Image (cartoon, rainbow, N blue to C red):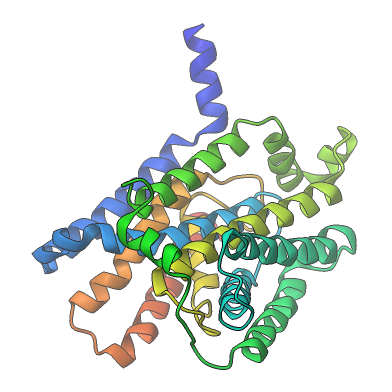
Length: 316
């Protein structure tokens, strides 16, 4: 019985990848505290900023394990954020539908990408790069500048928490539980098999193209959840908020064990990587990098980390 449990753990959880990701996260947090000890005073606020990236990292991971990639997660987040805030500001939709709109737009984005990649068999990099431009363009048409506010009850959620539970805890727990539910469901094996060896998966009776469509649909759900938290954090609609997130989300998934060739990747490690990358941005701020240079420096660091991780894994 004990050996069976250990075998199941090894099958579903890559401890080496997980420990590496946790080490990365803790290392960056410790560096933050060394550079600026006051980081401990607002560690919860910084971690809250990691929640949208955690969901976007999972969005990337779930398509990367099938051997595909999504270049539109940042733009999809932006569109869901902008549409929902616009609906509240100009149409008075500020009840539970405000939350549903984020999820609906996210799912719609995922379904469109799924049709393009999974059913029409368009290259995922080119297809989602094109839809990224479409989502970004639509967001700018809807709101050409940041606008607010958001419904007061939703704003208060992020100030006071839900039933006294901070939203950072709810967000991280939600991302973790959703991933674990997916990973320990037998269908996840179809996702990994489709990315690891599509031909063998097809021979085994798995509809690989359908699996990729489902992967992008779930990807859209994660994008919608990321937008939900982003809206609560910035308390407005911003047509450019998602621009820097796509590459960072891909890096979070790659640090979490994913490869562009598919078949591997761990969600828990991806969440830890997202937290570490968020604290990386705070570290750049703490080091005194001028505000107008922070995006440049952070993007360079992200690109450098991606190159290093890819090199260490043999470029796959």
